[in-house]
Image 1 (tube, rainbow, N blue to C red):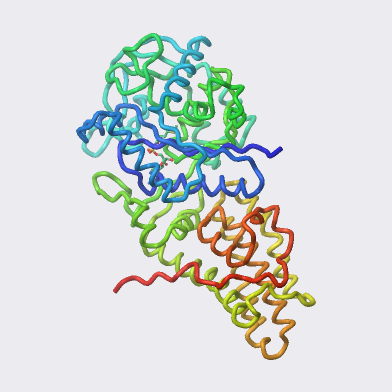
Image 2: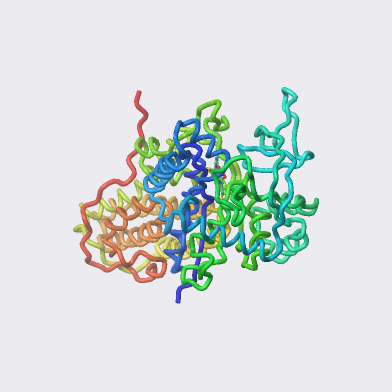
Length: 510
Ligand code: MSP
């Protein structure tokens, strides 16, 4: 039986249109989900939209729509972005769906039955933009003298009846979780942040609101709607069938990794495991935090109006170059800057020049000079063996990098082989061998085809569309493109389709 692997993206707020930041989390999760499928796992990959709460309600009002019609529209736009980015999610959960609402109310009841929830009154700070409660000590004073959340979000003083979750009771259990599972929060710097937050002491968490109504009603007390983060985090289990924990789909729990942006680690690494422990459920295996993109060195913000939609970028540069850029440019976990210049340079240098040329010159040469078929292999010489060995050693390197979510490192390992193959073709010069030694020429071409095949198979998770085209050109059957299929060699004499370029150079209009 295949081993199960469950990966999630955060569910995205529908208060505004999808942008580069959302596309980033989704692309990273997609590459990992695709890699795990390629490596023989039974993968469940979940994404979706977070549709309740004050922030979304306010956005609907500003758009002159009732919240449900508004969220229907924006959620459709998020689905469109996922489709355009070729995201291979197995499900898309919306928190306004009945399946989620019912399951979430069941979870609430479970928490009540466990004695983890009590009624009280909240008096304190709230930031609608972050949908987060802050302690007085966490606030910062802005240049105009006003108090702000540590994220820079405006805060308001809230006094209202509220249900509370006994978070304080989970301090020791959480610390034990982090200690027993040192990889639970990654990267390390984030783990340290969370550790010091929890060691500093926890307060019980307000988990219901009464001053607005766009949320899931608290069972038995309809004046309250659930705090949007309790509602949202629950998506990771409601989508796989909670409360029916015996359902086949629930077999994916606990999730292997929740991929999240750095600003929402606290919710995932503190509140979420505490809710789960209180409900007697297993906790996820890992919360991995990635960094933030700026755009042309500026923070993306409403006031600057510089949110980037990836769809026009896809129209201009092609889908796979955009996916590649996002995972190649910045070490995953750190922050990065998006600029057209950097994107064009990656596209022209690494895709068009390095990989595109390698494939194109090998395949055109075979079409013209080797009868357009997989050439016969003569005796292997030292440089052939060296390159083939390097190709063989690549899979474990890529697997290891992706185990650590080091997408940039996996790509760098693949590019080392691309560059080595380009150097090999230059040194072996099949164009000269054509006149002197066609047996040797054929061997060199076959070695190149083998290496390109390995590269194309391993690049599928990152650039599925173009690698499909490349593998088609290599004559590899669709059902022989898994990692497990890397071993058997190409079959001599198989005729190859007419080659065509997969990564045209981008030339900026004058
Ligand atoms: N709704 C919550 C998540 C609930 S999960 C139970 C939320 N949504 S969000 O739409 O604001 O953001 C979701 C993701 O987009 C986060 O992973 C966040 O880091 C990512 N990004 C938003 N802007 C970003 C950048 N500028 N750069 C990189 N990613 C960023 O939080």
